[in-house]
Image (tube, rainbow, N blue to C red; front, side, top):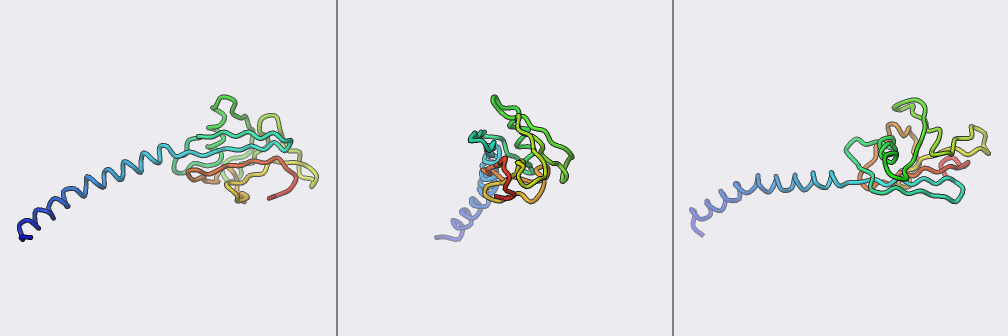
Length: 141
């Protein structure tokens, strides 16, 4: 291969690099736009509601996921107190927390298979995560 031909190939590669980077960035952006999260609500009485295809964006929290689920046909309603790190879920649909006694049922949160150790108001989700609320007496189980 001659030096001038090698030089032409290098120039082509340099010219193509920004185009390839732009295509890769567009692909990443398209993936982020189609990324979703799923919400599963176990009412503790044999009824489980699943809402799929909820939109995800960088920085989305469990609260954002729940607000998106409210907008769906046959979605959910919910109530909570506080905000941010002190947000505390009190009710989903017609099922309200029963209180602090050991035998009382309350809403508890998992994301994927991890029990949430922080508020749903600040718990950030990732694409394809499963947000799982269970009405149960067993803390973290």
